[in-house]
Image (cartoon, rainbow, N blue to C red):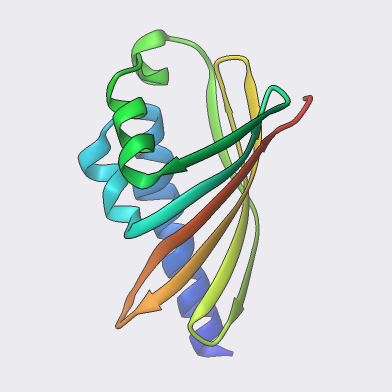
Length: 126
């Protein structure tokens, strides 16, 4: 159980200190530290299919006004973390601008580091 608690805390730290903070501040250098370099992103936004490579996603973050600079509300919340050995899934909710994203983030443990290897999102009604 100790490893699960340690790993869960490590994943939560990636989410809180890197992922949510990077999205909020629009800091792509920080944000990319949460991802494995080959990560793909899938889902739907406002009912439209969504697919991006990590590079495309980070470029979009770099070329938009950050939630921090917009002055609009932002929240990132961890709903659940499920771990099986070196893999994990985190269910999170990100609210920013006019979006309310339900996200499923797949993690893999590389040595002592947990990284997002797949991101699935859906824009849901509040």
